[in-house]
Length: 100
Image 1 (cartoon, rainbow, N blue to C red):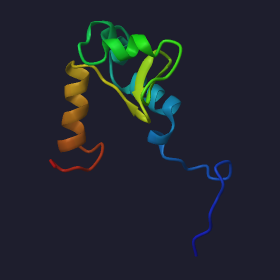
Image 2: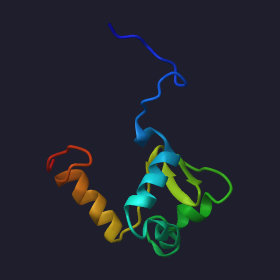
Image 3: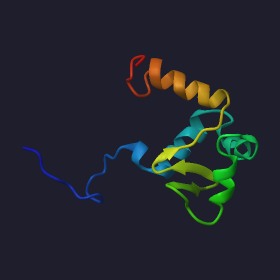
């Protein structure tokens, strides 16, 4: 029998649905993750939106702890960390896409 549990009663939650949990997990697991904050300033894809979202959100983009998000997704500038995340997501064990 399946019973609905309200958020407070449901102790087992999906970490990806929690921005603070995602950020703290990535910061402790990926060396240099905190450098993403600085990379936004030099990234052609995210520079303008990162600057525009300093005080208010725009078009679904917003900043949290100086990281840029699009809705619930973290925006990762072009760098080795982005390459690693894409590789792990599609070929590794992080998401289970299995190369698709």
